[in-house]
Length: 238
Image 1 (cartoon, rainbow, N blue to C red):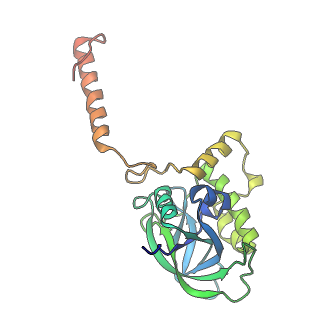
Image 2: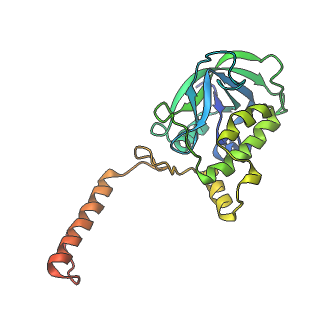
Image 3: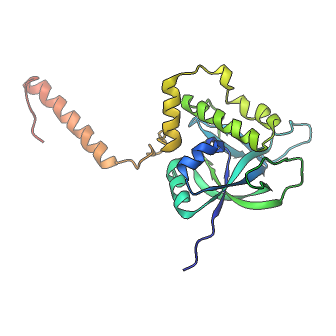
């Protein structure tokens, strides 16, 4: 039986952090840098990174107004499944294959995006949220992870000017953020096994159990009624 071809994945948020990717997807391979055109990078109303369709309008706009840079990884099926869970598919993000310009790295060395791309229009897996496309503030622990990712992205060849123009609108630099041990510990837990704090349509890092929620609510209501009618010492039977 032939082995499945690896999925080529475009990471634009906290998965810019190479250590996070090694933790989440231990058999993934770093390939290089890519650019997604006619999209813009934001922090959405969940408090996490997203890319939003943004076709170029005119040449007078800022250089990176309609551009998203990311790091590229090859994913085996097991790692892709792990990443699906961490990204909250299909509640928080959905999976699409979008054309990107790609600069291949030689043995993990930095690239120069001023050189011609190795490939143009290469289809890559992008986790995207088409519903929540409003600018908002990032989750506090997410700022820590994004700063780790920004450091790695710049080292690998993502333009520092792009980071300053686009990402720093949402993600304050490290020296602007109060450093707290508890925050760092939480960020590292999230890097390993993400639990969503945006509470999107039942996604909390694990599937929602609506039957259990209904049972708990019914129990609480029945207990309250019995205590009012019979006194606080009453022990209702359900």
